[in-house]
Length: 189
Image 1 (cartoon, rainbow, N blue to C red):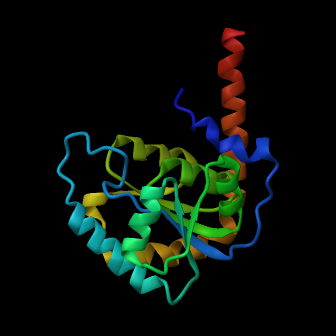
Image 2: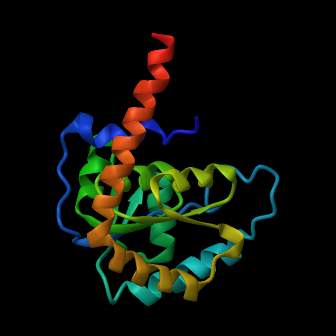
């Protein structure tokens, strides 16, 4: 069986509670992932689209960049030198940040999983087949080469509208995933 990544249950391990959405969380990677896998990804076009998208929403909603390295902090600051950035070396700190988000626009799949585990929807902008992991947590995905500013702004509206109902959806998804994991593991026990 194809099951959601077990990181969907990380929030349960850390006992972190979801809070009302205070901001939109973003993360930005030059390739929309760690590697290009030989694909042609126009990094300048991607950055330009993201910068225009960020400019379009930053005056409408509070925005935080969740950066997973100091290089990502610098990348976020190249988009906006005054950008609100978050960086930590402790995974639980990210879950605490995501707990306060309304929704996310992310390149990192595990950011989408952390958000989902807290009942927060997201859009994954990826560059390879791993982005299909978003399907198992009822999150949207788009390939980096296909993304446009207008589509991102439109997705923000849809995510904001779906946020109040996403918790119910993901709770059912988590219950089913846990049952499926237990069934799969029972076979080998």
